[in-house]
Image (cartoon, rainbow, N blue to C red):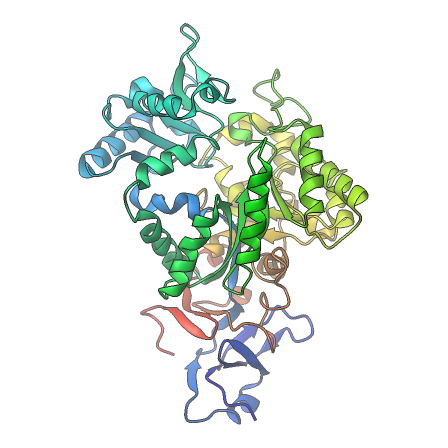
Length: 541
C-alpha cells in the first residue's frame, strides 16, 4: 500500500478523464497522482506523514494551462503604466505624465493597454508630437491592448533609426507624415521594434528576472499550473526560467516557443535546435517555433479574403509572401519543429493551413500538432481542415469580449456585421472534431481563466451566440487540450493516476452556478507537483 504525501478529500473532483469523470479524493505521492477515487478508499492509505486537505465539498480541477502568453516579452508590464482606464487621449497623456514623473529611474517610459477607439482623434493615434510633451529626453513606448500597435515619441524614433540603420526606413507598418514622409511615431507592426524597447528598459538591470517572477506568482494565484510562452528570443530567455526554477520561484510549468524572424539564418535554426535539446523536462520545455502570417483586424493588418467594411480598398497583407511562408514551414516541419503561427484573418488562416498541408504532403505525415494562434475569422470551408490535417486551433475567449462594444468598437467596424457574427467560431470548430485550445494571450487580455471560461459560455457581449460552447469543452480547452497542444497529455491536463499532481481548488462549483457568475470564481489553493504554490487567506482546509 502506498503512503500518501498529500490527500485532497471531501471534494468534487472533475477529472477531465472520460473513463472516470468524477471523484471525491485525490492522493499524491511526491509529485505524482497515485489515487483517484472515493473518500472511503482514500482513508485507508492515510499515514502519519500524509498531509490532508479538506476541500469542504468544493470543486477541484486539473491545474489550468494557459496555452498562449507573452511572459518573456511582457514581464515589464508590472513596471509600466496601465493605459486601460484611459477613455480619451487626454486621459492617456495624464496617466503617462504622472508615470514619467514618478519613475525618473526608468530609461524608457512605458505604457500598455490603450484602446484604439478611446485615444484616437480624427482617426489618428497619438503621435510623437503629442508624446514629446510627456517626455522628450527619454524614449516613450506605448503598446495597444492587442499588442500590435505602438505609439512612440521622437526620442524613440531617433534611437530605433540609429540601431536599425537602413532597415528602419524599409520596415512595413510605419505611419508617415503626408507632408514630410517622416515617421509620425506610430507603428502598426512592432515585431522589429519591441526588442529595442525591451532592451532599453532592461539594460543594466535585473528587471527581467524580477518581473518574470512577479508574473509567475500571479499565474499561480489564478490556478495556472502550465503556460505556453510564445515569446522566446534566445537561449538567454530559457536561462531566466531556469534560474527561477533553481531559486524555487517557478510555480508553473513552461513550454517555450522561439520566435522565427523572416529571412532568418541557418544559425537561428541551429540555436533553436540547441535550445530544444537543452530544455526538455517537465518544468521547462522548448521545441516550438512561433511565426506571424498577419496582424490584427483593429489596425487593418489581418489578412482578409474580402475587404474591410470600413476600408473597402484594404484586405490586409501577409507578412510572408505565401510561397515563401510555405517553404519556411516545409523546412521547419522537416526538422521536426512544432510550428505555431499567429493568424487572425481568414486569408491568413487559409495560407497557414495550405502551408501545413504542403508540409504534410512533401515531408510525409507525422504527429506534428502544428497550431494556428487566434483564428478570429475563418472561412466556413476551412473549418473542417483543422481536424483533417490535425492542426490545433489555439484561441483566446477574452478576445471576443475585448472586441465587443463598449470596450472597443474598432473591431466591429472593421469587420462589418456579417463577419462579426461569425467571428470566434468556437462551436463550429469543436463540432468539426478539432482539439480547441484556450488561452489568454496575456498581457493582451486578463490572465484570469475564469473570465475566459465565462466568455466561452456567453460570448461576452459579442454577437453570434450560436458559437458558444459547453462548460466541459471550455474546461478541456484550458486543461487536456492545452496539454495536448504541447505534446504533454500523457503527463498532465487531467487528474489521473500516474500524472503530475497539478490541481486547483476553487471557491465555487462551476457546474452548479449560472454561467454569468463563473467569472467571479477564484482559486483557493493551487498545487503543482504535489506542492502548494498558492493558498488564499479564505481557505482553511
